[in-house]
Image (cartoon, rainbow, N blue to C red; front, side):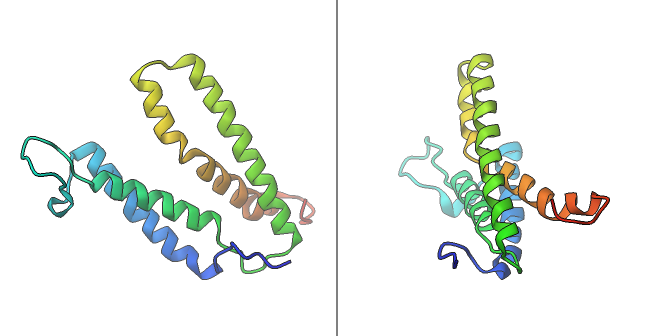
Length: 146
């Protein structure tokens, strides 16, 4: 079965580079209040309408989507099965974490958690997928894919 929505395997490196650059920009915006002057929007000098943080978050989201949707060099039924199971685990863990946060965080702290909750499913998916695909088979004693 051909996957129409999957990107070519060669797109992983550009997605990784975009992810690294976007995370670096996001950290600079968050920790050092860095802003690109050319992304300032608005007519008055009293408002702080700079779109640098939106650019950084858009880069993180696009790069994570790119990484999640890239094919493997060998895309067989085993990889498709791991991909599907990884998405299921990512969604279940994401909503379990969200339910915990609903009952333990309040006010503006909860809004911050909702902000980062947008990225959590893709991060968990990538972690589970690559662990199950590349790391765990190396630790199996028999060398047979499980």
